[in-house]
Length: 385
Ligand SMILES: Nc1nc2c(ncn2[C@@H]2O[C@H](COP(=O)(O)OP(=O)(O)OP(=O)(O)O)[C@@H](O)[C@H]2O)c(=O)[nH]1
Ligand SMILES: [Mg+2]
Image (cartoon, rainbow, N blue to C red; front, side):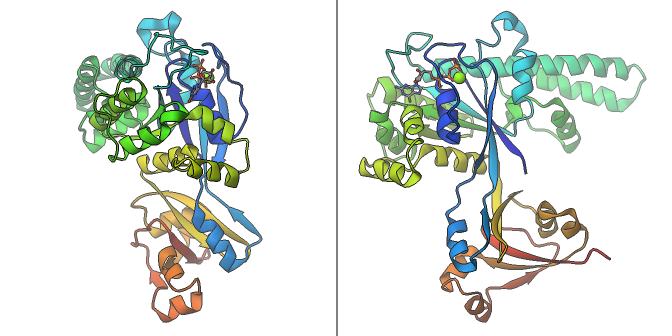
């Protein structure tokens, strides 16, 4: 479905290192700002253990996971040095305007070999700065739209007067430093918002980048089982980022980008073994992808047969014909019915479609059926209708 996540953050926060961990793409990193001038892009597979299990049952010729594209851009602030008061540069924006979500990298690691450009780690300060850049950029978009709408409003059309009203409300809010995502709006206004491609409307996922020695504690802290009382340094930084994310109603995940980029060069099983031996959570790259998926309100449905076992992405709440349309527009147009068995039911039935049928776990669903994550679906359609 061509889902794209933009990796953004201040200079030297570890964006490219994270990108490498996520994509195993070996993109260039370096210890001084300006390292990433052009954007790095890579498409990665969404890990889904269910596909392997299904392949053992269906023996398909191929397994096809669903994918996400990551874009790694230059550090904010550094790309905008010359355009401080107009928000981000056009070139930079071109890379993230069309992203479906933003992964915001927050630096909490210490690294004397690559010092923090501001001299020390401070998640609150960094996130305030970063959000200010995004807000400023959006403000410029809103101002521009206000000018063009004001010209159109001279025709006397009430529609434009209402749009101006809304844009001013949006501008006031941004002027206070509040992201556009906090605004409440009507469906007409939602249409205007969509045309503005505002950065602060995009779903956000916070990624705190910590040193490998505190990764375990940081992960526990974010899951609510750890404690950062009195902790300064890296853990205090993680706690501050966590507060920030909570106030922003966004998900947060801890990674040690450097460790993971290094582990990314090992075979996956070895990397997993290494992490579990140290009592660390599974690969942060996987967690970033999965959290990104849920932040975006996406689910996967599955198809399984002799030809292929495959995962497909749809937005949560999608109806069966929409899901069918992901496979082929004919499937949506000629949709008749969906034969559905949930992955968990099939597993409970020992992986046997026959048993699943006997237990009534295989259902025939119509066009109003809301697809669930993990549904294994076979579509019935007729294109001649
Ligand atoms: N100790 C430690 N160092 C890290 C970690 N992540 C990144 N670094 C180091 O920090 C420096 C900057 O990392 P990059 O990934 O290039 O950072 P960036 O955000 O892409 O930087 P720009 O593209 O210049 O904005 C490099 O020297 C990395 O090796 C980490 O988790 N721990
Ligand atoms: Mg970089």
